[in-house]
Amino acid sequence: MRHPRIEPWLAAGLCGSAITVTAPCAFAAQYLTVEEARRLCFPSATAFDPRPIGGGATRCWAARGPAGPLGYALFDAVIGKHLLIDYMLAVDPAGKILGLEILAYRESYGGQIRNASWRKQFHGLGPSKAPRFQRDIANIGGATLSCRHVTEGVNRLLRLFAERIAPR
Amino acid sequence: MRTPLIAASVALLGVAPLIASDSPGNDQLLKRIEDLEAEVRHLRQQAGAADATPGPEGSKLPLESFASSIAKELTLGAYGETKIRSREGATRWDPHRLVLLPTYQFNDWIVLNAEIEFEHGGSSTDSGSKTFEGGNIEVEQLYVDFQFADWLAWRAPGIDLIPVGYFNLHHEPTLFYSTERPPIYRELIPSTWFEMSTSLYGQIAEGLRYQFQISSGLDDDGDNSKGAGSRPGITFDGGIRGARPAVGDFAQSNDSLGYAVRLAYDPPAIPGLGASASFYYADTTPERGGADNPNLAASTAHDGNPRALGGTAVFIYDAEFRYRIPRTPLELRGEYVFVDLDRPHNLVANNDGDFDNNVGSHMQGISGEIALHLWPDSWDTGRGEGMDLVPFFRYTRLDIQTPYAGGSDENEFDPESSPESPDRHVFELGLCWLPTPELAVKLDWKGERFDGGTGRDTYQMAVGFFF
Image 1 (cartoon, rainbow over the protein chains, first blue to last red):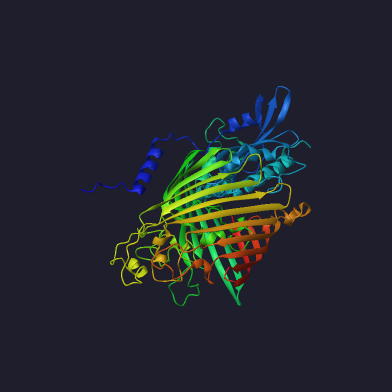
Image 2 (cartoon, each protein chain N blue to C red; image 1 turned 90 degrees about the vertical axis):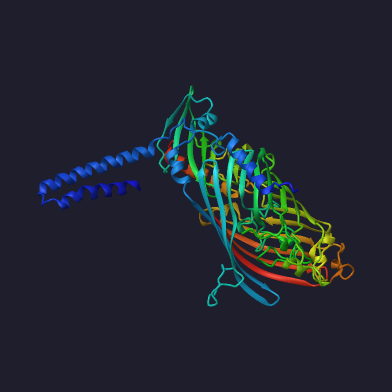
């Protein structure tokens, strides 16, 4: 008598389905809220005051601490390969980059841009030296479009900041 | 954008009753117009206020209205390339491929990806069509990803690329500088290599990613499916390229599966460096049903009888790196791949009475590339912003055949000593101009020097894009 054979395909499908049903449905794509990202960018801030900046969905907040202005947090989104990447740029009052945080990454490929070492390349760049992809900002293989588009997005925010927020 | 539409709608709603009513006086009309103007002003102020209002800051979906209204829509990317190639006195123009890349995000953790490819101008059964007869239309990727966490995502059964090497996964034309993909990605890694499959993948440490995939196994029955296609299986001059199985309609003739593992590492301490190691295994033993299997009969009939062959298997080991050295023009790439054929005396090619296609016990290839990014910083402005000019040189050694390893065709043919040997040195020298990062114009020379003493030179040009 032959025993019924379990098809590997079926086993793989069942395993995947079991994972889907039982895994905690934590948002893999959503890493930080706006509030959490602002706190990461300016841990000592006591207040974040909204500032109109224009530019569609772009948002800006002035971070204040006990000793005065700390800088600005700018929120925006760019398309990676297909889907939106939400990110926040922190700059000092003069526009120099203090930090870059990825709030949401939704695509199947390219999530490596969340790695701290890649984001750290932006630190210290700003009005006098805008970040340039493949020159100041190294690419990550398999995440080329995300790397390039976030770099372009950061440049856009720097320009918006210079035109509409930076003290004249 | 929204305000004029609202204003127009309000105006229409407001004016319509006026048209229908009996001849109102001028004062009435004037008052109504003033009311509408006030309404438009009010709506405009509301819209302006909404633009300046921050999103729900404590929400898990920041700026939810913005993200959900755009990200949930279907998006479409594309890549493609057109080529002109001149070889051995013949020049040919080829609309090589146009690939459409639809993606749909069901929610924040479930995503559908697909690739629809038109090759060589598409396909046509109309004899009056000018479409190249060798063209075809393929679905090269079709899968749903469930992203549970950074370290774990499940790619549900669908069509996906086999994760071996770098350029089988990332083969868009702006990501390499030559007209054609690197030579290793033909006989040894048969790019574009896509199969029905399912995967687990994720990032397990900063910069370190994995993918484990189960797929349809390679096929060596002398055909590529039960009912369609005519791929030759593993052969003397085609490597494993002809062993890719059929993709659809329950047509694979090999019930065994292929298993692939790929580890990719981008060292956090060394920006610009990326490397990966891949391993693939497949039992290539097809169904060998005897005389009622026409493929088997055709492929093993040199002595007049279908032959029941034993099992075979393919192991592939690949290691590669890419390094764009920051703040210098220099970029380096290298790759080594080894294909081990287990029990090659059972391969169809070694038992079919055709002594010109016998196969050895293993295959291997090694490649090194140097590229220079010469667009000067001072020109990286205005129309020159984002532009690049990249001369490159690549050397590849392809060792497709090693001494013959048995089978019923024994002693009739030694592939390694054949003047027709596909073993060769490949030299590629060219220039790639990227007017924007999404567009590449390529010009190069490819010189192939075969171990049998012959040579072949190809001069080629391509225009490729990816966005």
